[in-house]
Length: 110
Image 1: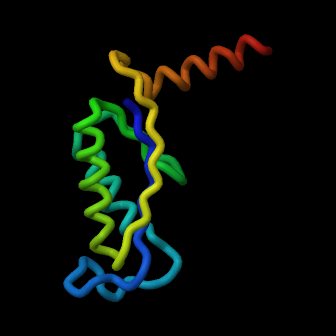
Image 2: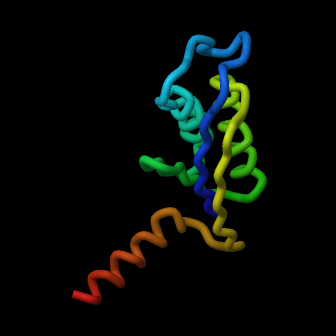
């Protein structure tokens, strides 16, 4: 499966958090904490300006999403998680495969 997710903190940082003085519009430190969890997982992944995608088996991907969400929880009193999943049993390499097929389809149009 591939999961695309976006996670962000909101509210005041809880007491004892990594950055109790964190305020303002930017969430890059919190997002960096989440992406670090994803990258440390060893699962195929890609991060864009809006989402992080991770590919693997159901349990391992959901564990990574959970741990990334928990990492962001240190930066606010609540966490917002947006998640989209493409579940295709028996398929691997789709993180890049889907994009490669799209590029071939676009090239064929030219």
